[in-house]
Structures are given as structure tokens and as C-alpha cells.
Length: 356
Image (tube, rainbow, N blue to C red; front, side, top):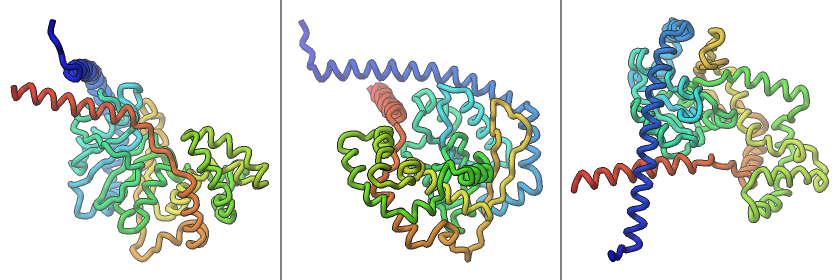
């Protein structure tokens, strides 16, 4: 009878599980790569892509691009946020195919592609690396502050995440280096104004005028967090605060605050945005449907803080109070972290075996 150290036994079982998990993901990734190659051919040969190429090659587009890139014309990073899972859906494959074609077909100005989405599986990561993309470990929450011209491609981003990106670069020297390819911001702002007009939502000014009510419920929120981290539970609890505070803003709108705080950035930048809409009829699989390239042109002397709603002191006081009681949840990154750890562990095991 052989006696095996329990720790060794667990390690062997875990090692086997990791191998099996990795090999399964590897097989899935091969299938996805084949699909990607087919989809890339489909996109490249489509009338939609042909027309889009003409738009990108136009004098108007190239003029805006040259201004944004300056001396960095052949040294641009594309950052893809909110791509979705290649393994679980078809649309992300089309979005990635477009991004790769953009890198391949246009003058070599995109030198690297970085991707983050909390939904990425191990198979997704293997596919992205196969196509030369860099998978980001850290959830930046779309708050990257640019130091050089950067193209942000945000296929399925929430409006609050678009606002995060603008807020992080809310200086002329930064925002002018941002090129944003996403849903048309002007359409988002138009919808927002329609909601305001119809009374579906209230203005951020209304909240800032009543910011002291946020302080009044801070204790309630903290007590909730002792028992649960669920925002849905918090929403349900806050719905009853109307009886306590007799203030309709808290009753109807508290859950909209993150969106509304970020929405002011989308609204404020409109007069400084040059939006080149991709209006080429119905695209393939909704690829870039109602999208636009957004170039920003803010003069160096503009104080961008003055573009935001409300007096600065009141706005900052409101924001500080808001940040105390409302911490926006991080994405559920369990799958992504698991995939990255398994990949690193598997590669380390393979390297160890090669050394033996």
C-alpha cells in the first residue's frame, strides 16, 4: 500500500483539473478562431465595409484624425471596452473582426489593441492573444487617463462608462487626444433631454439643490451594507424612504444618480465634439449600428470644469457626499480572474515539465 501525502494528492488532482479545463478552453478557442476568420472575410467583402473604408479614407476624416494624432500617427493604441464574450455570443465576433481589420487595413496607425471585459472566458482570452491583442487584468471602469492619442472602441458600454472616460480626461490636453468609437453621443443626449422634458427623470440640478438629503440617508445605506451588498435590496429599501423624507427625488431617482452624474459630461462636451456618424444603412449583425467616430476639439484656454452643471463648490460638495454613500459596484469579474489564473498556472506547469 502506498501512502500519498494528502497535499500532494490534492495538488495532482488540481493539476489534472487545470489541464482539463485549459485543454477544453483551447479546443473551444480553435473553433472560435475558425469562426473569426470566416467573419473577417464576410466583413471585409461586404458593401458595408467597403463604404466604411471610403468614409475613413475621406479628406474630412483624415483631417480630423491627423489633428488628433499629431506626431503619433503610427503609434496609436486601440482600447476595447465592453466587447462581450466571443464564446457566448456572435456580435462580439463581428465587433472584434472590425477592430482587427481597422488595424490591418489603415496605414498601420494602430500599433496595439488592448481589451477588457469582465465576461471574457479563458477561451476568449486565448483567441484574443492568438490575434495579437493584449487582455487587461485590471478593471479600469473606463477611467483611463490618456497620455498619448488613443482610440477607444466601446461596442456595448453603458452611458455611465462613457461618462467615466470623459471625466477621466476632462482637460483640453487630454480630451483632444481621445478618439471615441461608440454609440452616437448626440443621440444619447437627445434622448436624455426627451426624458427630462417628459418628466421621466429629473435634472441633476434638482439633486444638487437637495444634496443635504443624501446626508440624511447615509446612515441608512451604511446599515444596509452590514446585511447585504445587493443593490437591488438597497433599491427596494430606498423606495420606502419617501414616507420618511417626503421628498420625491429620493423616491423616484436615487438609482439614476450614477447615470445622471456621468451624463453631464456627455452633455457638456457636445459643443466641442466633431461626430462622424457611420450611416451606411443596415450593417452586418448590427455591427456599428448607430455608431460614430467622435473627435474632440477644445481650445487650451477653456476651463472645462465651467462646462458642467451647477456652481463648482455646490457640485463638488454634492459629489463628495454622493461618493460616500454610493459606491458603484465593480463588475463581476470572477470568470475573468479564474480564466487568467488558470492560464498562468497552466503555462507555469508546462514550463516546469519542459525543464524536467
